[in-house]
Amino acid sequence: MQENEVLYERPAHYIPRIAAVHDLCGYGKCSLGVAIPVLSAAGCDVCPVPTGLFSSHTAFPGWYMHDTTAILPDYLKAWSGIGVELDAIYSGFLGDTAQVDIIGGLYTDYPKALRVVDPVMADHGKVYPTYTPELCAAMGRLAAKADILTPNLTEASILLGIEWPGEDITDAKAEEMVRNLLALGAKNVILKGIHRAGENVVRNFVGSFDENGNLQLTQVQNDYLPYALHGTGDVYCSCVMAAVMAGKNCIEAADFAGKFVHAAIEISTKQPEFQARGVSFEPLLGQVSDLLK
Image (cartoon, rainbow, N blue to C red; front, side):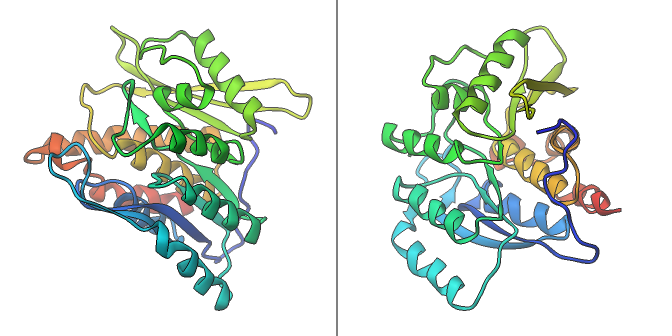
């Protein structure tokens, strides 16, 4: 695959339809609460497939989760009964290993749909509390089928079955990880959110194999801000997907997403209790719509 290859050719005036397979969080902006507005701003018809219902994101104490696995087969069967067509399938947080098989069924039913997998499992060396080893392994099987895979360093380490290398990795280590993720089956990998001690940039590594099996790797940078806000990964991947559905290649999409998240963090810091409530992106949605110009 060429570095500048466009993954989605959007016909003029057409509104693409995306199945967004994520959880729905009542408070603390993330997952479907991010994917729906961002992708809608990119002129997409977003069809939610809720993998779980959360009272708030899991950084809050006393959160409640309802696992929706049992309803999903009938939910999606009803779609097929009315002839729903999909141009892309975008998955994030999963609540149960059976949900991987359910997404696999979507891949079978919609073989031409673009597959974007954000393997939402962990960050900063720690696995999220709802993820079991079995669910992490199942996520690996899904990641291997992705057209675009967008892990952070912790998630990439889990997918590769290696020890988390810490946040401060070299270009050579990032290249090794991207190469090995591609070898597992993903067609394009964006290894995101790498920040080295003492630097004021965040690095995202975009990689794919060309037709001869050679690695094509591009580093996309944006300025670093010293805040860890819940939901930035969901905003980032949703922006990648928005840009791709607007006809951008993976490098352009990663560049747009990094700049958007940086601007959203700046806005977030001006909000009350911003480090708990999540990333504030709403005033920037016009930038997503501008991708279509």
